[in-house]
Length: 480
Image (cartoon, rainbow, N blue to C red; front, side, top):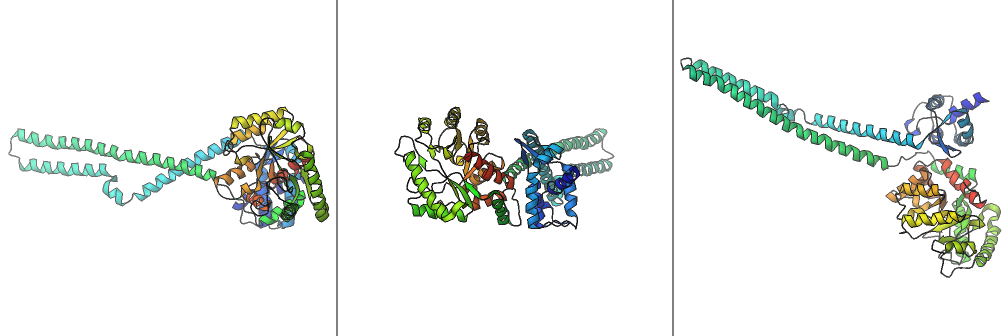
């Protein structure tokens, strides 16, 4: 059994990046397996990667002509990888990766990149200065010495012609070349120093450019090139039984979402077409304003759910909650049943003012946790105090908050979408939501956001964890 595991793990979880493997019998389906094999694996709250020795074994195995995986086999292989993570950890084929080690590796890589950039740039500049600039000024010391020798020779010839001159004149003639040579050598040293200073400045400028280039490259995303991205997403859909949506405004006639049952059904139809099968209906709740009573929301929900079941049966599951705007007194409203938790659990979907200070947001999270609720911060990418503030986001997670982002926030190439996709890769997003309000301006489209995530390097495993395990933990009122 152990030998079989060694072969299985070496075959499925250890390879170099697929984009670098183009020959040796590795096909497109196998490239997809390779991208997953190079990702990290989670087990009991820790992150693991495959050992390098098994990476090489895996590479050699797939390079064999006899090994040629089909798309179906590749999908099955990926599933087996995640299914055998526990065995890999226990048998020692997966090794734990600490955050400090990753930071040290990044720092070392950046340092080497900067040094190489400076060196290459300096060598390139040296090549550009030859041969024309060398003839003009690079060898000024040599030309100065030649001039000195010529002048000395002229003075010697002059002293030979004046043999009959007095000894005093002869001495003056002999001293003069010596003084001139001394002065010219001094000038040569000054010119040499003057030539070195621009070189030093140039090297420093190149070093600064190198640092800038490294930082710029570090911000760029590594795009994972799957042969059939839609096929990958479809495989995820089949495995987890459909996509999930933790935040929507589909419940008809209760807020600024669906205005009537016809529009609500149109939104459900569109969500179904996009692969969404589990949906939380979360109408707005604002303390101190006129809101629909919880009992009335429950009645509207049940009537609407009945209509959805008539068309889709057990293919779509709906759950009721509120998107609660945080203000003083909101905890009391929740305790009195005026504001709804998520499916009557401890989980609460909270919305904040986009300009809220971090200290206020942190204290709100702390208060909710002290009152035995689990806050889900809705679309946290909108809040100014959290945007591009990874340390703050991580602190909220460690405090006990759960974090939600909208599918639409992952689409695009601007710094906003880059930040959102990075947060998913850093395991700082727990839930996805459409935050849909209609079928046109804010439709329930999950596929485009998921495709953008997969192309940016988010693993299939991470998507499955968020869409299935985390969602089910809310429905079952479990802490994760």
